[in-house]
Every structure is written in structure tokens, then in C-alpha cells.
Amino acid sequence: MSETSRRFQIVVGVDLSEYAPTVLLHAADQAARHDHPTLHLLTAVSDDHGVWRHPTEAALAEVEADARTKLFGLAQRVLEDAMPDDAKDRWAVRLYVRRGRPDEQLVDLAAEVEADLLVVGRFGHSHGRRRLRRVGSVADTVVVAADCPVLVVHPPRERGSQDAQCPDCVKIRRDTAGETWFCSRHHGDRVGHTMSLIGGPLGRGGTMW
Picture (spheres, rainbow, N blue to C red):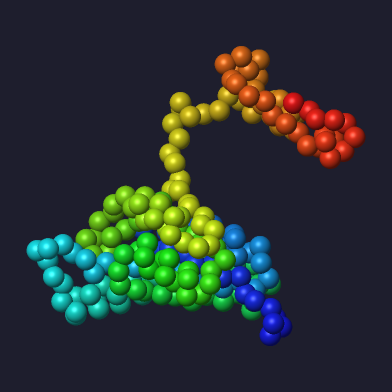
């Protein structure tokens, strides 16, 4: 890398929940699109435990140490497989454990490193309270407050039989390269059309609806 070239900076919110590997894999996928990316992995440790509970400095330090160990292990495990073999000498990974609200810490870090992208999950883990909780507001706040593009990763959704796609619709999409979207049974109750630009206004064949 030349002295004048700039690394692509990606800040990643890693909450150490069961969904953290999914978030990290999405960040690695984005990093793989660039020659010299830097992944900044941040885990936030809450120092706000309510009015009636005031953890000691020793207790917070213990939580931070535990978070550092888990963050390092997670990064090593996930990125070892996700990083292309020919990119190991071109990627940089930095780990951060900071106290405070995760949304504020993520936005601050993104500003500090002049991030090109911020990746955050839709769910998270509260280290201070030791329980899973919904933190959609973290992603929402980051989207509004960050000065860079934000990729929000949702956890995998368990699909039931009611979510299964019609096999005839799937087949007709594949056979027509997406020019026809629904089978004859479902076409009537769907509104909208698909436009193909192949051979369309940018080619010679006109627009296909």
C-alpha cells in the first residue's frame, strides 16, 4: 500500500450475543470488497446500572476484562475463516472495549477513525445486567447520528411453513430470469410489475415490464 492510499475504515458493533458472529461476518463481507480494509471491533460495557446499584471500579474492570477476552476470541474465530487467504497481510483489525452506551460509543469511534461504514446488529447483550435485551434503539440511534453509511444486520429469522415460498413461483422466476415473478395461481393477487434493464432503455430492445 502506498503512503498516499487510504484504508477503508469499518466500525463494527460487537455485542457478544449469539448474533455477534452474524454481524461480524457481514462486516467481513464488506471488508473483502476493498484492498486495504481496517475493521474496528467495538464492545461497549454499560456503566449505568440504575439509581439503586453502583458497581465498584473493580467490578467494572472485571466486566471489561471478560469482554476483552470474549471479543478477542470471537474475532479470531470468525475472521480466521472469513478473511481471504491472500488478504491476511492487507487487512488490519483493531479491538476496543469502552464504557458507556453502545450507540454513543459507536458513533464516537466512527468519527474518530473517519469511518467509511458502520456495521451494527439489531439485537444486543447488556454486559452489566447479564441478560439479552432488545436494542433496536441502538441501531436506530446510530443510523440517525452517524456521519457515515450504516449497515444494520438483523438476526436470522426462523421461518415456519406459512413463510415458505410457492415452489411454482420460485421456478418461474428462475426459468424466466426474473421477468415473470409469480405463477398463474398467485399473479392475480399481486400488484406491481418487474422491469428488466437488459435490452431495455440502455440497449436496443425497449423497456420490458
